[in-house]
Length: 208
Image (cartoon, rainbow, N blue to C red):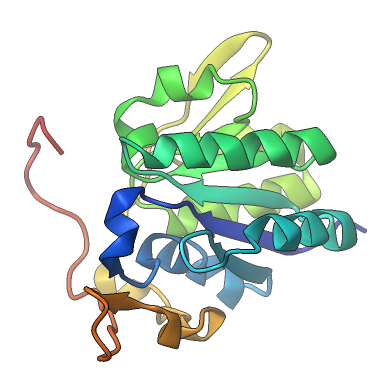
């Protein structure tokens, strides 16, 4: 029986991390539908875990996760995300998934990297759940996973995005998956608690 563990990782951002460490809402939101469906979702935030490599290796060896997913911004986070992806591939056969802004806007160039197996473009909750089900039960059904991009027979395939859920159709954000006391802004003693109050955007700005 395949593992139902899903490890989602927020890479470091670079110098910005010294001043602002907000909650990793990207991976928290991406994993909420899978968690509601019974998958064992775990969050690793490289920004607040100095021993992240030891923890990652432990999960890979002991839990043999169904997939490892990373939320990746364009810029310095790519370097850290690639470092993590290479490590995953070096020690395991676990599929690596990228989501977030960078793989959404630069899908082809992202997927050409040999350490990245899948990427999800845009909103990730339902596609991640669909991908987990496909990997667990029938990898041949990858073509049915909405917003998924992947490689097959040397070709890059982009599945249609599909239906984007409404705000109130999604489960609550599983904040309990992280230690909220580790997040702060500008070294203040006050704790920071991020929330999401809307979903999506009606515009098509080129810079976004």
